[in-house]
Image (cartoon, rainbow, N blue to C red):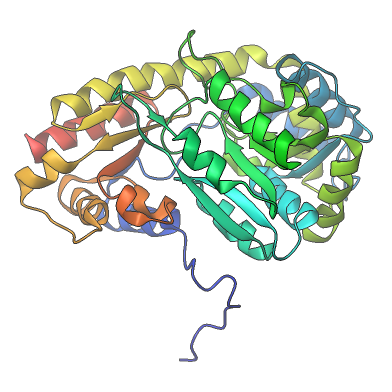
Length: 400
């Protein structure tokens, strides 16, 4: 068999961990708490709206920037968080999910040789998109802070990552996989460095509706002073409405930055699924109650899973947002006699899938410095209550 032919810029990344763990889960009949997709169908309103859009004939190419009704809906949806109503014609681009929006932003606004600051752990597409843009990544590590309850970063380490070659910083809040929600002080420091060094902020806010604590609400960095003209704010309906398979995302940015995003978007996907765009417009306009109900369900599953993991011996970082929980597994792995020479999270993930029938994600794959993530596992709780209870029962049986 001929060896795979892969460009050098992408060869380090291989197959995504989500594909690997889902395949392993299927092989062993495991409850899949690895990949972050809900196991329900999303709001009935969405199904009806998509079917109606198809019947009404919205089945050919959509406009390159996105359907006008959806761009207007995105402007109204994002205005409370950003503090302004973006111009639907010149400041909003509909993309094939947030993943394409991230790639289009990097490819369209970053030049080869520029530097991009990434917080690690990061969603795996970030690192690949930086490579596709020909840029050089600089890493700032999120670690458990002094409170021992959440992740944070060292301000000095962040300042040291910025220099004259820095073009962009990628912020993800609420943050996957740590579950942290950036505080206003943390965002203000990032913003101050962006202004000081004339840097663009790419803000991935796909979990914007999933912030669980009143004292730690979601904030958009684009709303801070000096940031409107230097921020690309990205989101989607996938997480807020449990419709990850629709791949309807967007990028909100001033006209100058939108020009770069669209220059790449037109040659990546050009147009996004037409009927789903009309349905998404209806969701964003009329479906706030659906989003709130979904957020409440995720929060309930968080409150079910977190204490169960703690009871089993995991050191749990109760998430402030998203639908993921990071758990320190070292006490559990030691009890099981499992070691991994720097990849202990991978060893335990495979053991849990094969012997407990529960699949998780080894977060070291989200780090440039894998040893930083080796002590942890990531569990997804965006599942029905029956699914979470079955996973807990299996873990209790296997870990006792």
